[in-house]
Length: 146
Image (cartoon, rainbow, N blue to C red; front, side, top):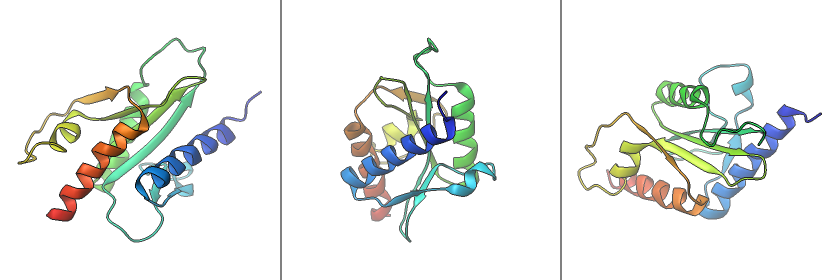
């Protein structure tokens, strides 16, 4: 039997390492998130502006779904709201690629000069982590310019 906590921890560390390798963003696992609701899985490791609340989920490929669980997205958005951040859900099914879910307005506003689109819709983006990091860098650059 697979230890779900160990599997979750392993996947959180994989995503953490992807952020560091691609963006140089030092993140750490939020160990309090198991005991305290409304916390993301990954948080900044240090004092720097980080506008994202990141949840990392995985599930057996035996589940025939190809999209995320609505409960995962609800948990992600509640934690992001509590922190005043943008929600980001990373998920994967066994032996499949990572998928990333963000609010459509966050994706569009990353490339929109006035940053005023307000759509409360999620966009499931089947993309490489590289594409997500490109969007994340745009959002960080906009924040730095404000």
